[in-house]
Image 1 (cartoon, rainbow over the protein chains, first blue to last red):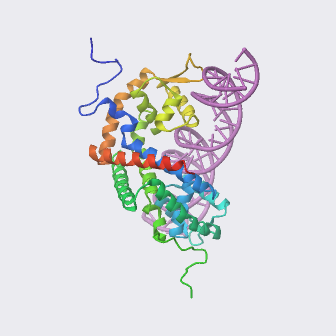
Image 2: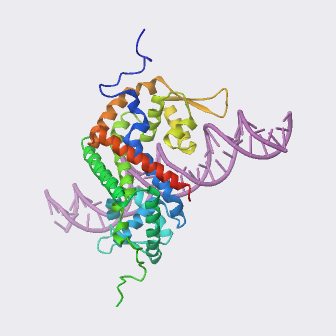
Image 3: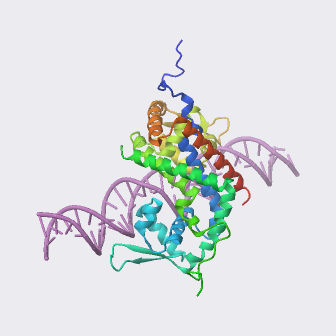
Length: 163
Length: 163
DNA sequence: CAAAATCATATTGCGCGCAATTTAATTTTG
DNA sequence: CAAAATTAAATTGCGCGCAATATGATTTTG
């Protein structure tokens, strides 16, 4: 009588057992779930203003630095033009930003906040505080966790290279 | 001469300054970025097997418990039928799972691994180790971070209720 | 200076993720 | 037991996220 429960099953390498494959056991799944939980929490706050979470991220960037190129926004948020082009058109259609070709370099499109886009900034402080409350973290806890995640992201992106 | 730089700008509430709105300063953005970094890292490992990351999550569930209903998978992963139905059809088309209506309760669809789906499990151990290496975390660090994120997710989902 | 290379943005296509609706089956309850 | 309510899954529609490709504009370089 074999100790193998199923002919298809393969023995895990030393130091790794079968149960470690469970999604709940894995860091990646915890991050995946937390990301979804955040967007769920933002959703009712943002849809009062007709915004999605990625659109809100773009506005966060622009509230720091008005007049950004699509490329600059993409570098800040880690998004490419395939994501940003249609997203920015929707923000323009909503009246929150303007898109104008750079006269010096016609390849570039300059994104600027409209008065409506600037006005939304004051709502962001309230959202920031509501989200802070929803996390149940102190500011220090949130900053510590944020920094751990930034380091993790950097290490993952470095490892990226080797594939 | 006003101290306000722009008529549209609004003063932040006490204890919150303008720069705190920057995406890089926020925990939500760190999680958002880390989630994308993880899928980027998984991508080359998974596409050797023609899998996406969410498909891989479904397989992780099934490797723990073969024979799950769509609902059970959805509860484990936090996904609804709108996401799972087409995803499971693709996994079926790829030959990794079977979908059969439950004879006892015809509303339910039972998802089972095929031999091909079971065979993929042995690849998962290698992926697990590669990902572990890519994170640059010790197992303890990864587990600590995972638990912090699980708590955060729970608190966000509780706060959910109040909106 | 013209051809080639590079660059910024847009477009297309596909797979999530989720809200809203639909369909069919089962359970509840009057 | 029949009508109403509930449930499980599928479908539709929309907005990402990203790879691949296309389109112009600018820079490089031969």
